[in-house]
Image (cartoon, rainbow, N blue to C red; front, top):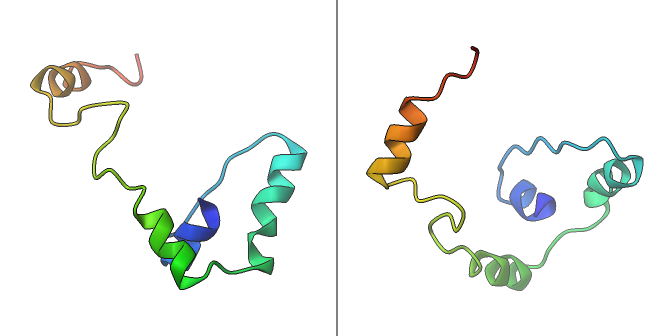
Length: 70
């Protein structure tokens, strides 16, 4: 996902506290994805979140009522 986003010009800010994952995140610079790979990965985009329905009035109301810094 990191390499795909970088090649699309998206700024990525990976987060990890595990050394091996940090190293994996840095190893995206020694290869590029082919146009075919990029197209295949793009097909995976559902166009919506499978976790949260951002258009649900109940979800929006719940978010609006949240206090981030009590």
